Image (tube, rainbow over all chains, first blue to last red; front, side):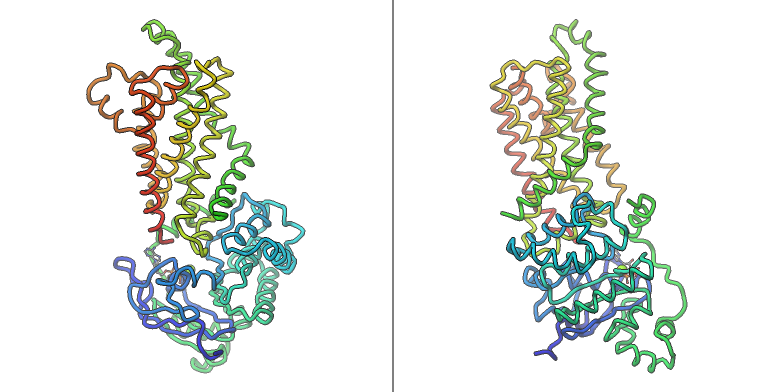
Length: 266
Length: 248
Ligand SMILES: Nc1ncnc2c1ncn2[C@@H]1O[C@H](COP(=O)(O)OP(=O)(O)OP(=O)(O)O)[C@@H](O)[C@H]1O
Ligand SMILES: [Mg+2]
């Protein structure tokens, strides 16, 4: 059973009008591993995560999560994963506890279990003392930790983390990955992550796939990628695989809103 | 059911916590009430129409409900990218439950805000003809709230860019208010304007509230309520359909 992949992506294409965001992508993720999905801006990472998390349908190709198709078995698939999106999705006018509690209700956890597990997770992510404070009073790192804790509340089989450490200081990043690693060990939750920090991927990921312009350009362990490219760091391997030109993707509606969000950072 | 309830509760809790916002959003209606009320009062009286404050108070309540309901829905656009909405969209619950919870929450907030303005009009000197009719008037107000919350959900689900927000304000919300007869009588209007007021659902809402509160109605309360219920069902179905199509 354990060599059955928990995620299987085969020949997936996703186009938005003229833009092909994901172009014939195939890869497997094994149950229980930490899988890093790396690629330059606009490579198609978030789009792939959205398809796996039932938010987008592929133009063609097939996806499976725990043997189920996210497009046709939405509810079953949704029970099986937790996700931290690239953009925040907490309710900042509610407290940490309330955010957790609503999540528990949405995932049909009985009251007792909801409370006990919320306490366990908030303690683990060092947010217990702040549980009754409004989320808008939290630092960026605390918000991210809360989102991860929330994503784990319903004991998912897979946890998606889309750039969870963006904008965090080295201390917070370090601590976050320690927690994620521990949970991966303790609960056997499969972790699917993206990041632009190569050192993080190098340290925590069991396996890595590199995507560029919507196509997978390499997969393997960090050591294998270095060996393939004849380099001695993952960063060098990444640059060897994806080139050094800067990506000039045109901004999407989401990008434009991100700009505004930066100005109005709450 | 618990899902609908908790999402409804969330909206109401947030509203009750946002003291500053509550006070700030009273500004618009108060201005209309004060400036138009006192400014046009004498003209209105001279025209033999009675007290303008009595006439306009139901209109200002309708306006408050319209603005509050529309705003909560349009804020969805932001919420979809940077807020809580995405969290609910990947939860293992039917989209319909989420839509109903949000819409009822938004409608409840609009009714609460309308109540606040009702109290303000009382302080300003507005006197309902019969106290018994007040609860009935609030049922009509609740209908208005549901209609525009559902419409706002439909729009919030369909908009792609922030610029759309301005468009909706200028080409939908403001005309809905000005064409509703909230601030002028529906009798003896020029043909075109008269026809436009008849396709505006808020017209029937304001007319119904006015009928119940001061006994003055153009269409009759029964017709008003029938139209509101019909439009309400239509808009909720439309909102649910648009909401089910959101791709985040
Ligand atoms: N809704 C959309 N409509 C049109 N184009 C889109 C949409 N979403 C994504 N794209 C385009 O698809 C491509 C892939 O975007 P995606 O967000 O998946 O990249 P990413 O790898 O997550 O990048 P980043 O590291 O910047 O987050 C980009 O060219 C982007 O502009
Ligand atoms: Mg991305």
